[in-house]
Amino acid sequence: MEQDILRYLSDLYPEEGCGIILNRKGTLEWHPCDNIAEDKFNNFKIAAKDFVSLGLQGDIEAIVHSHPDSTCEASPADKKASDHLRIPYHIYSLPEIEKSVYLPVDHKRPLAGRVYDFKTANCYTLIRDYYLQEYNIELPMVEFEEDFYEKGVAYFENLAETCWKGVEVETPEKGDIVIFKIHNTIENHCGVYIGNGQYIHHMKDRLSCTESIYTGWGRFITRYIRCKK
Image (cartoon, rainbow, N blue to C red):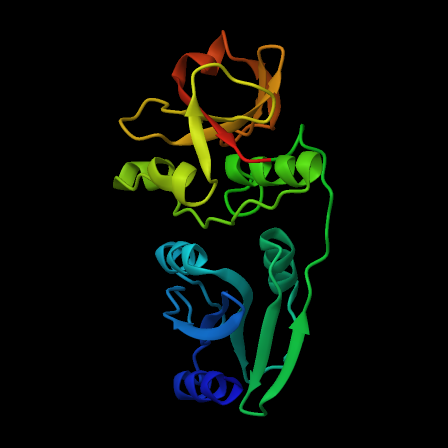
């Protein structure tokens, strides 16, 4: 597998190459991915559809990418992304062909009062952190496209069944995922019910906070999903 990775990355030099190492039922597989970053010489970006598709086929063991004409050391952006995704980064320098592995640091952040950032602090990352802190359950990572609801991409339609292994319920209990449809025909927001008629969520350009299901944004709730705990 290592040789396949190096061959792929070398073929793309001097652009950054990238891909995913997948653990499928105990066997590691290399899956090269297109780099869709605007500046492919200095950055990489894996398409959300590739990330989700592979994540549904197995466990993402590591994200691989190259550093053309640079060292194999993880950059601040690499570390931030790896910590956020909770997935190791395997980094290769080219043309020297040196390798480093960055292991994510577990940052336990407060759930309320977070400053919104589309990539690292959004409604779904809040849910993932809640489940990890409350139940020691790591929900699958999903890389959302920005303004996906304006593009007609209905992420939340299949997440309950495919990623969360949950069922829809009428009356919420603590830990149930709350799904919203806000000024759109597509479900485009989520939160977590924390009991006593309250849920915690993180809206775009706002701090994460708790609110009542009976007022405010609560009127946009479409359903509750109960995951296995």
